[in-house]
Image 1 (cartoon, rainbow, N blue to C red):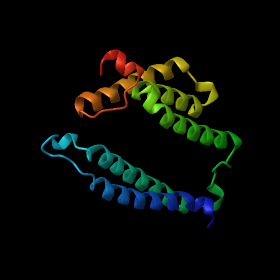
Image 2 (image 1 turned 180 degrees about the vertical axis):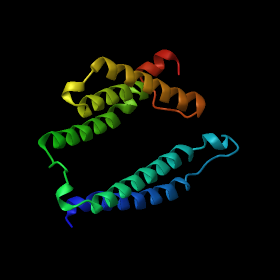
Image 3 (image 1 turned 120 degrees about the horizontal axis):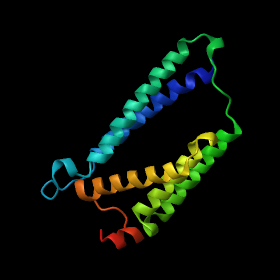
Image 4 (image 1 turned 135 degrees about the vertical axis):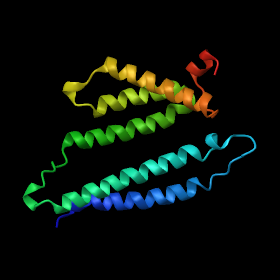
Length: 167
């Protein structure tokens, strides 16, 4: 049994354990029940993210178990290529850039830029469609902004666009 066949199973178990710790600490977040309704407390989004992480970890564990049951010759995982390494490094760089410009540029502008860049990095070269990526980035960002700002009544970092629209 090689490490390549076990890595999904090991990562899934580690991530499931981390999601348990994450959920435990998400429930420790202090809320002000008299000021905010229970569906809009500070625990809601972290708890949902923890549950999502646990579900995805369980899927990864399932895939790892299935991979272990395959015969040795059936393991067709591709070797880590240079393009994959470049994608990972670029993704890390734009996440750091996103965090760096979030306070200055504001949620809307920083998120649109981040999503567009992330889609350009992850999409295969033959399927890159910048116009579609811009539309998806703008629509998704507006949806999330409205959900947080109006639906959950949570503040997001203000920037140029938020000042112009008066939020």
